Image 1 (tube, rainbow, N blue to C red):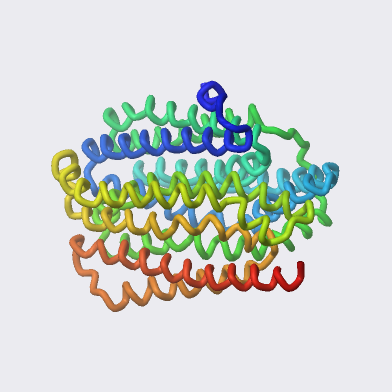
Image 2: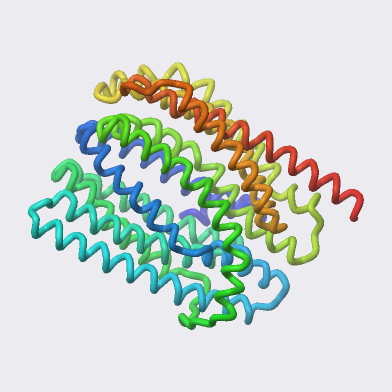
Amino acid sequence: MIKTLVGKIKPENKSFVALTFSNLFSNVVAIISGIIIARWVLPEEFGLFNALSIFTSYIILIQLGIPSGLSREFPFYYGKSDEKYAEELAATAKYFMLALSFGILLLGVIAGIVFSVRGEYEYAIGSLVVGLTSAQTFFTTKFLKVLYRSDNHFLTLSKVTMINTIASLVTIFLVYEYSYYGLCLRALLLVFVDWYFTDKWKPLDVKSNFSWKNFKELSRVGMPIYFVANVYSLWPTFQRTIILSTLGAKGLGVYALANIVQNMLSTFNGVVSSTSFPKMSLAYGQGKNINQIIRIPLRLALISFLIYFFILIVGWPLLPKVVDFVLPNYVEGVEAAQWMLLVALVSSFAVFSNIYMVVKKNHHRLISYFIGITVWLLFIIFNRVDSIQDLVVFSKALFYGYLAVNICDGCFYYYYLKANRFTS
């Protein structure tokens, strides 16, 4: 289906178009599903379910940078035509990520049994959700999907995304039937769907084989990437944690409206980043200079910016009317959701930050993140959050934080390009 849709497009753009289409379709379904679920589930129940993702976000910190190292070294050594070493690294990463997956899944099952014995069934099924989704993140997302590196592979990955989307749509009836428990059961089913098809069509089948030498190599390269990336990825997790602790499950549930908007609008950034990073790493392995490497995501990033700008102009006045008509229980989160349109616009420049990983300058990326998070935190500290009506403070804080990151990144990019002129 996807290959037919992109059959007349230039070969170098097919993977981007396919992934954009599949991810856009996925996010459209996600936003529609989110709206439907919000009509069926109270903000308190939605908030309780969303709290599970907070635990998962903290659990995946134990990966020790191995997936990050693989994502950089695997396409890099393929670019250097050293496929044998690339596959040896993949075998070690597979062993480690499988071990983490089974370990966290076992802990989730044990916690679920303990809560069941106590009669706390909401937490029992929640423990299973945390265990299985964490295991999926470790093995499916952080290992299997890293193996997808070429345009053909990205076309296949877009098929997986389409199947996951259809499964997400089909299983929505579970929420209508079982409310919170339906949300959890749906999440568990989607874990298996994603794992099955990602594994079925994986581009490389290696046996898990642990090598201490390869493990140290992956950790050496991946730990700086991992540390910096987790500072960034934990940023929204910290925000959800603060919302949950100050405004409770209802506050987190109402803010889900802003999260839905943000996730939907992150489509193009995710596609540009996931398709351009392996190409940038491959180009670096082939000896290309910084000027050539940083141009790889340029045109696609511009397209993303223009799309986000159009959505901002149209969506800002339209969103309150839509929410008031469709989701009256969530009107308190409208202003926070509107500001997410601005967040999406400024975050469209983040696709260039892959250059930090390619040239191994992640300490510069860390500086940008640290400044951005500092701006975000100071904004929250100096603006009172006493009720759900104050949720917009968190979205505004994200906007100014991301803006600070972009300014710092721009300074570093200018420095790289200027230094490259003198060395080339």
